[in-house]
Structures are given as C-alpha cells and as structure tokens.
Image (tube, rainbow, N blue to C red; front, side, top):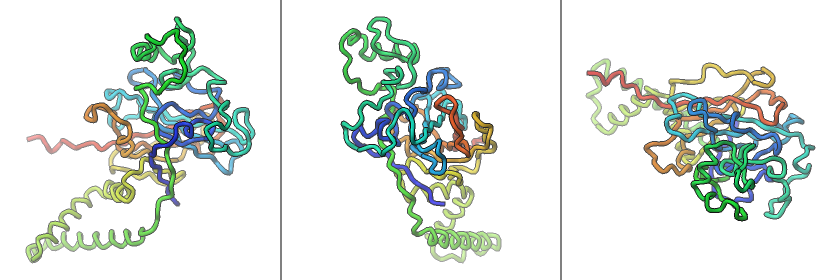
Length: 353
C-alpha cells in the first residue's frame, strides 16, 4: 500500500481558510463543519484541565462514502511541558468532521483558488469563536462585548497581550496569538517506492554479514579480519540490529528528512521503538465500531513549532491517529477519535553501580 507523506511549507494565509479544505499546521483550526465546533470542555487537557490548542489538520475524504465527501481530522495538544508525559496521551485530542457533497456550508463545485472567492464562507458567520485559539467561545469581553473567549485563561492572556489597550477600539484584523503554533500548509506527496527492492537486498546482505561476524566471534576467529574499518562497520550493524524497529524508522525518515506526517489509512504504523507499541485501541465513540490506523505525526514536526526553549517543551516520538473504520456519521459535528503517543524511553536500569 502506498504511503503518502506530508511536508510543512509556507503559503499564502488565505489558502489555509475553511473554504479551501486545507491540510495545515498551526494557527487557528480551519473548521469543516462551521456550526457545531468543539469548545473548552471538548478540548480539555486531562492533566491541567485547560483547553488544548490546535496542532494540525488533514483533509482526508472517503471516496466511497456519500456522508464523507468532505472529511477532515483535527489534532490538538496541550502546550504545557509538565502535561507532556512519557507515552501518555492525556494532553492530546483528535476530532473527525465530515460532510456530504451537498451541505449548508459549501457549494457542490470545487473551490476556486483566488483570494476573493467566496469569502462569505467563514465560521464567524455561524458561531462565535475564541479570539485566542479559534474554538467555540460562549463568553465575551464584558467591557467591549465585541470579542469572545473560550475560557477565563485565554481572556486574561489576551488582555495582557494587547486587548487591554485596544478594548473598545475598532478591532479590525487580528493576528494569531502567541499561544498558537506557526502556520504552514501540509503538502501531500506519495512516498517514492523506487529503490525499495535494493534496500531489501542490502538489508539481507547486512543480516548475513552480521551473522557471519557473530559466528566468527563465537569461534574466536574475529581477529582474522585485517581491515579494522570492516570490523567497525560490522560492529555498528550489530548494534543497529539490537533495535531493528528504530533502524527501520531511521531508514524511512532519512529518505525524506523533512516529512512531518505519514498517511497510510488501514496500513501499518512506522514505530520509533519496539517498546510501548499500541496494544488496544478504543472503539468508535459514535457507533461502537472498530477503529483503524489512519496516519501518524512524525517528530520532525517539532522543528516547525518554534519553541522558545527547546530544552523545556512538549515532545513526542510519534503520534499515531486511529479513526472509525466506517467513518460513521458524526452526531454533533465533530467525533472524538483516538491518538496514541509513543516515546523513546531510556533504560537506566544498568546505570546503577
């Protein structure tokens, strides 16, 4: 099965609005269903109880489903480093939204990629959104009553960030809050399968050489190698064999170092470690049906998130997203799906002296 890769690229901001069905990183969500969007309680971090912020979204329609002609998966994360727990997913949320071709928000014909095309297609026409993070916002500023917030925390943050000065003044266009991640388009390209056969042959040859070298060690003949470089290379390959899972991950990553996402619906996860793999996936909360793996977010995405302190920030090995296998109809506009966070955990058991 062909794997599609996602790459983060800069583009004109208007191309990342809902009317163009974007796949994107950062900024505010480009909601698909413009009316029934998630709010603070839906996006609450399980650890600090504050709303998670938008990380990325993937436009992934189901061609064989009339109810999922348009379909987008949204990923949110809590930015607090203390909530980023090893192999824990309590600081992450995933939602699926889908619409038939004929719906109340978008025309049936494809969008025209022009800045002035159908600018009336906007979430603000249907519902109030948080000025800071873009989710459902039932509360407004009590003074000017012209801006809304999803929670008290975001209102305080916005007040300190400039609303204290601008309150009561004509708002105009508002840039993205510092709370949000930098905005990029996710460009999808098929993984190039060329050279896979050669890679398989090379892997087999390496396995054979490692086995040969290990046998020579057992027989006390390893010293017969005259070329020290060859010995070092074989030792290196033997060390890699200890974690073949990471070796495979590294090999796939090195082919396309900038990939931030791998889309392989119904396929296999590219794990980063043999430890802490997914052992159970909860069933769909809407239809109680089975979920399947759809895509994973790679650690390379962290390089695009512009953390102020790279040593004290959120982190992950991979994020694996599972969605309803049938992509059942959503009852409230957005269905909660399942995400698994896998990290590499260092084994310190051998450090004790």
